[in-house]
Image (cartoon, rainbow over all chains, first blue to last red; front, side, top):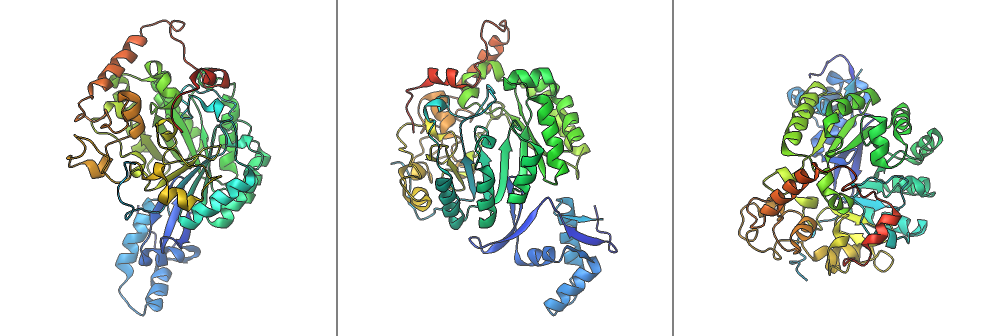
Length: 90
Length: 381
C-alpha cells in the first residue's frame, strides 16, 4: 500500500487519537487495543484531518519545526499508518 | 503473601467492568464463575461511576463493559456517558440479545466507541443450541445495525469441538456481516468451559485444519478485516503470558464489586480479593494482598524460578495451574517443562474418549442459575 500524494488524508473514524495524561504521550485507541506514539508520529497524525494531502502535511511540519527534508520520513510513517488502517485516503 | 517488592508497580491500562452476571444466554463455555449465582449482588450506578473515575485517574484507558450480558443493566447509557467524559475508549462486549436500533443510537450518542457481538456458530440450529436461546437471526441483525451506525465491529466466535468444522462458513459470515475485526477465540478452559472440557476440546488435527483455513482467510482479507486468533493453549508447548503479568495491566471488577487481577482469579484460594465498596482503586491496585500476590517472580517454584523464559510468560496462568494441579504456585502444566505436563495429554485423551459417547451419556452443562447452584461452597473470593 502506498500513499497517493494528490489525495487528502483523513484519520480513520474507526480509531481515536488521544493525548494520555498518565502516559504523557499520544495514543491510538481501537477495539481492545492501543498504540503508543512518539511525538513526531503524533504530530503527523494530527494533520491527517481530511483537508491536506501528503505534500501539504510535509510542508506544514517543515514550517512548524523550521526544517526541510522531511518528505521521506513522513511518507514512510504514513505508509505504515495506512497499512494499519489508522488513516484513509478517499 | 507471595508478592515481591512494590517498586515496579505499573498503572492499570485496561479496566474490565463486569456489570452483571445476569445473561439470557446459557453458553456452556462461559468464563463467569461456576458459582456465579451466589454472587448476585450488583454495584450501584454511583459505585460504578466512582470506579471508572478512580481507575481513569490512575491511567486506565481501555474499558470493557462486559458481564453476563451488560445490556441487562438499565444504567448502561449513563455509565457509557460517564466513561466518555473521562476519556476512556469504551468497548461493549455483548451477545446482542436485547439490543435494539434505538439503543445502538442512544449508546453512540452517549459516546460508546465499539461494539463486540458474539455469535456461537454459522448456522441457526447450532448457534441456538450452544446459546441455549433462540438468538441467531437477531444477532445477525444487530451486527448489521452496528455497522450501519458507524461503529467498528468485532465479531467474536468462540471455537470448540461443536463448531470448529464450521470455520469456512464462520469466515464467510464475518465477511457478509462486514466485521472490521474477527475474533476467533479458541475456548480457554476456565469456568463453565473447564466443567465441559471433555465435550468442547477439539482434537489437534481439528485445530490444525481450522487454523490453516483461518490463516489463508487472514491473507485474503488483509486491509479489510483484522483477525484476532486466540490460540488453543492445550496444543502449545509454552504457556500464555497471562494478563501481561499479574497486576501489571489488567483490572477486573466483578458485578458485586470484587476487584480481580484477572476475571478468573475468583477461584484462587486465599487471595482475599478486595471489594471496591471498601477500598479505593488506588489502594486495591497498589496495596491489596490479591494484586501483589503474584507480582514479580519471587513466588515462583522450579522449573519457573530458574527458567530463562520466566519474564516472557510469567510461569503461565495461575488459575490454570490451580485448576489442573491443585497448586496455584506451580508451573502452568501447558508448559512442556512442567513436571505435570502429562495432565494436558490426559485431558486431550479424556476429551477424545468422550467424543465416542452418545450425546445423552454425557450432556453439556449449560450456564444457568439452576446449574450454578450445584457449584456453591467452593473456596476463593
